Image (cartoon, rainbow, N blue to C red; front, side):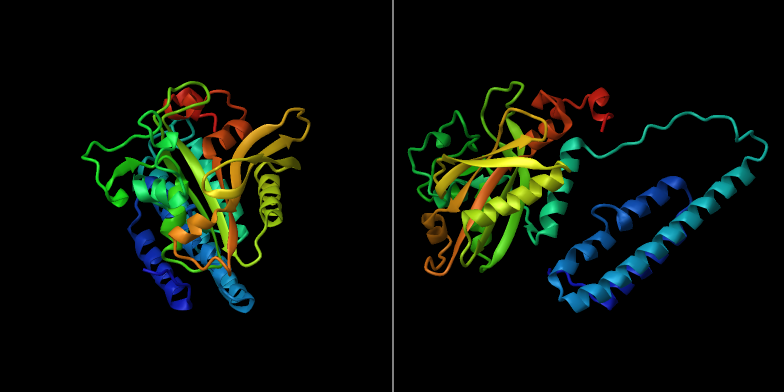
Length: 339
């Protein structure tokens, strides 16, 4: 169902909020309401994300309305919190409430989730749509549609988790755990017409030995932009802007020649942080290969675009100066509570 933004939709959220907050009787319930409506994936934030699809006049109109609604929600939540606290004090008047209580450990966002939220926010401001895709993928979208030859080593069992089944002649009926979020390229193109800008953050799987820099499961973010007259210069400008906002500082970047079956030309993208001497290899990218467009049945005379893939785990390791990727998946509270 296509999500829309209009006064009726906003009023509906306001009505539901009023109904929900009337039912709240404790602080725990209040926190749930905060997340539901004002959280990073809350109902109000969903509407804010739709503003970029509106005309400047409508964006101003609905932006002001959403800000007013957010302020009202915050005021109601604050008043409700004070009310609940006063009721607790009144109920326990015989208890010295000034004495320190037991510390309650609160959960928080996992560092990888936090990085994904940051990626989505930065690219969202540049007009990119956030798209999700299946982790259980088929051979066609994961390999064939991406111009990957049948004898490519990545298809081998050493690199890919294939689902145990009888091999089918139709590649769309041979299943695997996706090895790359690039599998969403043709899936998306089959249902959408250019121009478009898309990022696909998600989990991927590869049959690799685990060490400080490799995991069998990890997170990637695929990105691609398709339109008329798209060039490497567009890609470089967008990446420069992204890394400047992501690292909150100036970042030096460079492009080197590379090879990927689904891009031509292909290149490696490196960065050097301010004050650092060494370059860090960060992502593979390139101009989308004509065979990928053919797989999506696009008219090659009118379009071109670029695609890139970056490791979310690697971005987190660089930003937070973490030297072992396995720490993200061990659920050690001593590590996680630092974020």
